[in-house]
Amino acid sequence: MTVIDISPSVMQFLLAFIVVGPLLGAVAALLPAPPGLKGRNPDQAVLRHGVTVTGAVLIAAIVLAVGFDHDHPATMQATTDISWIPALDVRIHLGIDGISLPLLVLTALLTFLCALYSYFKPPAGPSPKAFVALVLVLESGTLATFAVLDLLLFFLAFEMVLIPMYFLINRWGGDQRQAAAWKFILYTLLGSVVMLLGLLLVGLKSGTFDMVALATDNGRGLTTSVQVIAVLAIGIGLAVKTPMWPLHSWLPDAHTAAPTVGSVLLAGVLLKMGTYGFVRILLPAAPDGMRTFAPYLAAFAVVGIVYGSLACLALARTGAKGDLKRLIAYSSVGHMGFVLLGIATMTPTGVNGALFANIAHGLITGLLFFLVGAVKDRYGTADLDTLAGATGAALYGRAPRLGALLAFAAVASLGLPGLAGFWGEMLTLFGAYSPAEGLSRPAFRTFMAVGAFGTLLTAAYMLIVVRRVCMGEHALPARTTPAASAPSAPSAPDTPQAPAAPGTPQTPATTPALATTPAPAASPTPGTLQAPTTPGTLQAPPAPQFADVQPYEAAAWTPLVALTVLAGLWPAVLLGLTDPAVQKLLSGGKS
Image (cartoon, rainbow, N blue to C red; front, side):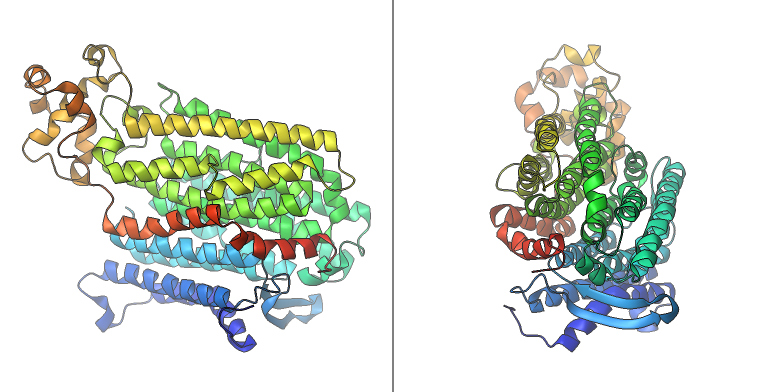
């Protein structure tokens, strides 16, 4: 069944345009704008160009999804197969099925939303020309990773995203951006070198680099020892990108230093490239090797789940000076652990859960990084103690819509039933309860129990973040605490009265001044503490000092909220695409 009947040649063109279009747009972004398109501000013109190109790619991805034959999601569609390097039998082979289509649409959507957000709020840094070009190259590489069906093309696309992300962090990032960028690229490059050796081993020993042919052969052309070596080599490269514990340490630094848009794309789509490689390449092409390493992969996955949650709890506690962006980054280590656990079960239930969790994580964590970036813009910091302390950063009273969205994203991330985060985690745990034949059931049921414990830890740190950032500290109403609390506490009395002071109602432009309350506010403090009704003044200021959700922010965030709810209430939309394709992959190419 197709919503709209589109000819195969048009489908081929759409997929080729989705992969190549952003590259052409990146080249155009670096060229001088035609006189009629410059407008009054050349910087805004190039940012508008980024919105136009990513918007066109998103429209093409939606049309491709509408023309996709949903009755046969296990069949490769919109395929292009052209000989490229005959000596090595390397082909320009493109195609999509029910596994790659959701990731393709997610990438196009998140990149467009990032471009739209950047148009209204450009990141601080060098010229926007280079920024737009790098984002478009990043989009092209990510889309190509999900669309190519040749091992060497997959490797080229996989590596294509490293350079643009390195420069996005290094040139437009925050504190410690250079060290974070170098750590990111060194980790991923070293992993990629090992992965290339594994890909070459598979291609040369099997006689083909075609991923469809390898999936159909289902490892019959490779000995068990070759499969074990290939899974070890390729798996290391994919695990670094995922990121799997203990190869994750580049991620928190990269997220903390990256600009908001960089964090959204890094969490939303780049991490998915690693888990996609496990499903697309290793599960069907080297099943015996995967069966050998599956228990170890599952063990690392559940350690990552617990480790990421404990790290988040440590950052969320009072006095830890934890960075909210860093906390969300560590949460990604735990969430991607569920994806790896589902893949390690080697069952349709577990792999479907992994693919669902992939999409859910992209939607929810992308929204979280957007929101944390907005909070940092308004308050001038992402430090949890500053946000939750005596500066009065209770979002429910200051910016209620922003606070509500942050609370929504947090409960979605902890896996609340009815939202997207629930189904992926539940299905992976079900898959671990009954793993594939040949895998130890007691071991995997132990992994399931540890993973379930990790969901409780996730709920704990997310609820702590909501309480501290959205509601403020419980000690605020007590008038004796400010003098005895942390150094930022003396500003507590000043902050609630700030709306009454002349000129304070301004929006984010006055934000940095709030962290160090101006001197004039200190003198009226004794009087102001007695005049108003203190509880009401603290909890519901008559005029919030910070701008609530702006129209451009609502435009960028609403699709992520809507899709999170839709996937949670109607999971069959996604599972109906992935399940037939997963069944075919795990059964040796047989539908």
